[in-house]
Amino acid sequence: MCNFLYNIGMIFDEKHEECGVFGIYDPGEDVSRVPYFALYALQHRGQESAGIATYSGKKIKVIKRLGLVSQIFNEEKLNLLDGDIAIAHTRYSTTGSDDVRNASPFVIPSDLGDFAIAHNGNITNTLELKKLLPKGIHLKSTTDSEILGYLIATREGKTFEDRILEVMKHAKGAYSVTLLAKDSLYAFRDPLGFRPLSLAKINSGYAFSSETCAFGTIGARRIRDIEPGEIVRINKDGLKSFQYPSAKKSFCIFEYVYFSRPDSIINGQSVYTVRERLGGLLAKTCPKDVDLVMGVPDSGIPSAIGLSVASGVPYREGFIKNRYIGRTFINPDQVQRLKTIKLKLNALRSVITDKNVVLVDDSIVRGNTMKKIVGLLKEKGAKSVHVRITCPAIMHPCFFGVDFPSYKELAATTHDNEQIREMIGADSLEFISLSDLVAATSLPKENFCLACFNGEYPYDLNKDENSKYILE
Image (cartoon, rainbow, N blue to C red; front, top):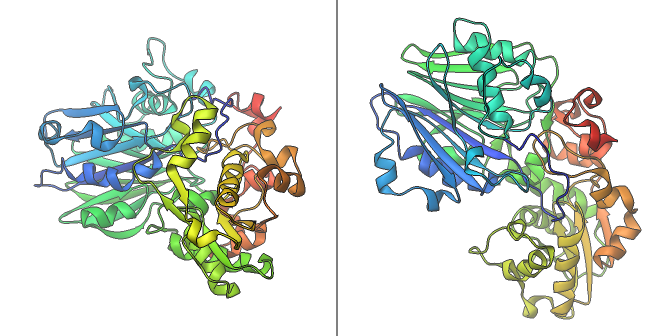
């Protein structure tokens, strides 16, 4: 879920995925606390707001606020959310849209009954979709999630699955969705399958989640991924699947590189294992006469271990991460953000002093953060710092739920490899090749969206009003 007036003015060097979604149907059980724990497991996908909606046979109840899950919910609030069906959402948005009106889930009225909806991704043609809404509908937020909900509410069709299939004919972009409607729970993905969504068994019911790490937290057993273009409905009649035609896949490969937790399974692949493989493939670029390999917490650590094993260079933990400091993008001033890096990470002088270090991280977007990290290592006595990156240089913006900005703000579009090396202060810099990135997933190249690396978007974005000005 995102601000459909996509903000391209961000100057922080972080990568952010828009949200995490969850849903559970467990008849006869009070599930109010289950989504609370699931959201804890999905908190890395969004830290701006969170919400839970439940249905107890009478009406939909929803609590949503700005803040972290732990700041929003307590025993008193969870006691208000009784029911055996629930959906939940945790959100990150672009700068300027930290408004409680944009928090999910949204409750939408319809002639089929009120329903609640939670969405992960970014729809690229929201201006076009708004024109399909009947007159008299007044949107209360600036999110594509609310537009998606009102489209479902107003399309023709006798059932929710009929209307979702109808919406899929018009909506373009990324959307993995959970939807609570009276006595039924729905989950569906866009026909290209940009964002993850999985199905699990729990007690006498089922659960959906953006990532499988949430299933372990609540004691559910993963069954499978929801297919691109698939709609799954769960109610008293059991589980039923409906399929919108999907001839092509376009899964965001950055889920493996950075977004997903390492204990998640995506497309049948362990995220941790893929990251280890990335490091192993990067080992061919490992300089001679280096003393140790270290990773930038947290996503760089599995890859650093993989590089160490493949190269024979010892792995050491060179950073201590302060788990109580928020992500660096939360500060409104860039100077404050850069200072916050030192609050988040402290380099171990005893490990790195007089050492030639190979530093592994997942990506370089703008270069600000990596410059500070390299500087921190040298400040603590590192003799040299050789940076190795587990994805190719990011050359193009993303429109499908990742806040990679406009071309002019991406370091690799305005600097060559040597210029980026100089900018970040590294002694050497190497990015993994695109072919090695794909190989690490053990899946075909055709399964992925690789547009941020090669500019090959899955469809013509020039026709989407939301995207035109960024492509110019």
